[in-house]
Amino acid sequence: MPTHSRAPFSTSTLLLLGLFSAAFLTLFFVRDNTQKTFMESATPILFYDPSSPTAPETPKKPTPSSPKEPTTPYEPPPPFSDPTPPKKPINPPKADTPKPTKEPEQPEEVPKEETIEVEWKEGKDDLGGKRPTKIWRRDDEKGSYKLNLLEKINNDKYKQEKVYDREGTSAFLQNGGLIGNVDKREKILCRLGQKTSCFTNYIADSIDMVYAFTPLYAVNQQAQQDLYELHDEFVGYIHSIGIPHLTLEAIIPSKNQKYLRTTAGKEPYEIQITTEDTFYYRENFLNVMARKTYDVWEYMLWIDAHQIFQNTYWWEESIYKMEQNNIAHLFYHVKYMRWGNQTFLELDTVTYQYRIWNRLDYGTNYFAGNAWGIRKDMYKKLDYILDTCIAGGCDYSLCYSLLKSTDDWPGGFRNFPYYFEQLKPWIHEAHDVLQESYGNVRGILFHKDHTHLFDYFGIQNRFAHGGLNIQEDLYRDDNYTLHLKNEELKKYFPW
Image (tube, rainbow, N blue to C red; front, side, top):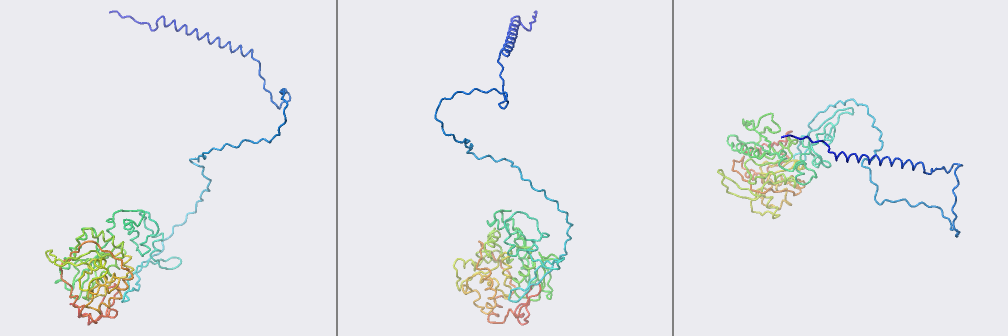
């Protein structure tokens, strides 16, 4: 089939394009001639400088006759006021500040010689005992001088890395905190709402500041092996919670005793001492431990190893109670438990009942101790836990110190009046320090049956009306350990 090629433009299209081109050229020619004719026929307009002498005078228009008005000086209109304040520049120009001059480099300061000494300070206990205190001595061009704790902390050379910001000086430092424990209590105070900024919101983060003190000793190691087994169970129990512990093990070398649970060279976590006395040592060993480990702990728990708590979170509530009060009793009630986990006796604590009734009945039995907790700053104010009660009853004395009057518990030492009088000076002094501020942790304490070191009540009966003079019959060594110097009284205790 034949194909036809189509021209790109038709005849009519070409005709239209020609007409448009002719019209455009005609319009352009007429416009050009019109503009030229206008410029040739227009009258020129001349502009004169008024200051020029050749400038023509302009004729004045006649004004109608009218009375003359007084002329007033011209006053310019008031300036325009914009009700909106002017916008401030986003980046205002900075004032020229003189460039800081570069100070000449100072030569590096050679560190001064420093020594750490142990100074024995007079204690305020009834025996005039001494306690070790670390003293930092600095030697420089001014001579040799001592630094107290706050001076050492504030010294640039001893500044520790700042973990988080806090306001003001730590209250704990003001109350006598120690190197190595700076800002530790801030975590607890934050959790209790005492701080505006918090590094942690969980009190469990601070459990490493709480230490269980576990003194361990026996008059007869072979016959009292259950004390060592109970110690092992208790250490495993508190470790399962996450609480660290400190152990002091004492032996009597003259009885061929050996260290069974501690290793030499592991102080302050494992302390070994020797003694030749067999009286009630528990609280005295607690004081020895506390003084040797001041830079380790913030909260001190002393709990007999033969006990376990019903309250799973007793340790957390203990920290609250220790912070909110001056001392804490770590339970409400106690249940005595025979081997085989059979309970046979239940008692209320002295402090729990006294908090409710403000008195204690004469003939009612109460449980006085076995589990306590205290902050380090309060322990230092107290100076020492009563430990001169060599026939027992130290927990009773601590309970008495929290009452409004020793007469409020007539049944405590009712059978041992002379022994009670020997302990009263510490009770009254502790009352002034603790100010009846104590807290109780909820729950039951299960007390496992165990062998006793000796017959506590039997010896207290022998001291009931005389025989013991704390000032004359006891003394402390440089380790703060008590010793009995009255040979007659030594016969009261088992050997």
